[in-house]
Length: 166
Image 1 (cartoon, rainbow, N blue to C red):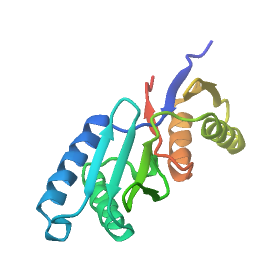
Image 2: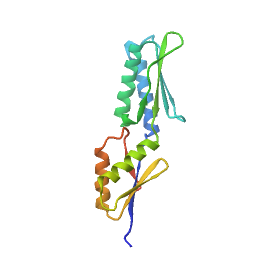
Image 3: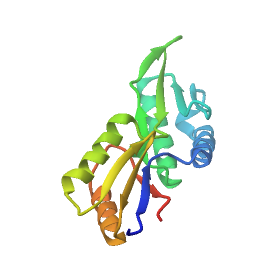
Image 4: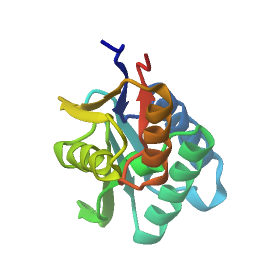
């Protein structure tokens, strides 16, 4: 029997890089002249994978989001893995925005990944959903490389990571 090769498809963000980006953004906001005397805070709840932005107007919220997004991009945090919420009014004429970090493949995305591999009709390459990841297996490593290339070219709404390649 031929040896089965496989790799796992997952997603996620590096929480340390998010923390570093938030710290850099807080420093920039503290230094910028247009934020002097204004309410503009960034809070990172690591355990929940949540960023909370708090500002005193919609305009400042947009500026604050631009600063945070720029710092995240510079730290190479995939912006696709951010679930940006709506700007909502908070107490005292302020606004807030929640940004959730997508740390794992949800069931819907995992099904899309598995279906894309099945639709590609690659010989003997099979995908199986295992919790918050998709295991792709096949006897030929070249076919697995083609599957990776096909998945990279397809947009699933999150940044895919390939690991555990054997």
